[in-house]
Length: 137
Image 1 (cartoon, rainbow, N blue to C red):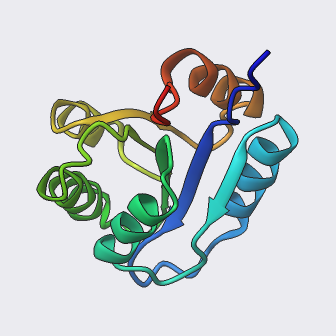
Image 2: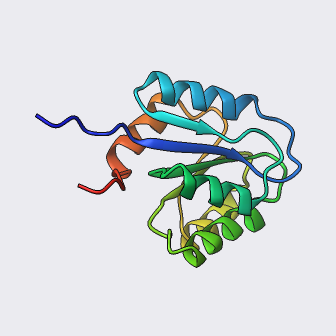
């Protein structure tokens, strides 16, 4: 019997946003729910997040944004993933993102955005239903 690899989820903070409590809470929640979590820490560039995602062979990227730079950061990450032929890594996010901006982000490739107060169980359930292992069979 073969054992499946646990899903690997990168949780990242990009830009000058120094508020990482929520990202750390989500990282711990995902770890405690059975996922392998790679947390990048604060002040990463989109390039750093993409490079780490590729090096760590992650199955999804979760970005926490509270700085207001969500339109730029999400799109930069998605563009860089595509440039590196890693566009199959789904990107999701959370933070303080105006509802009016969410449809445009989804159109550009952000799979889902979890707002403040989203129950952790909803995030775990979404990942289990929508993220597949990218590891070779």
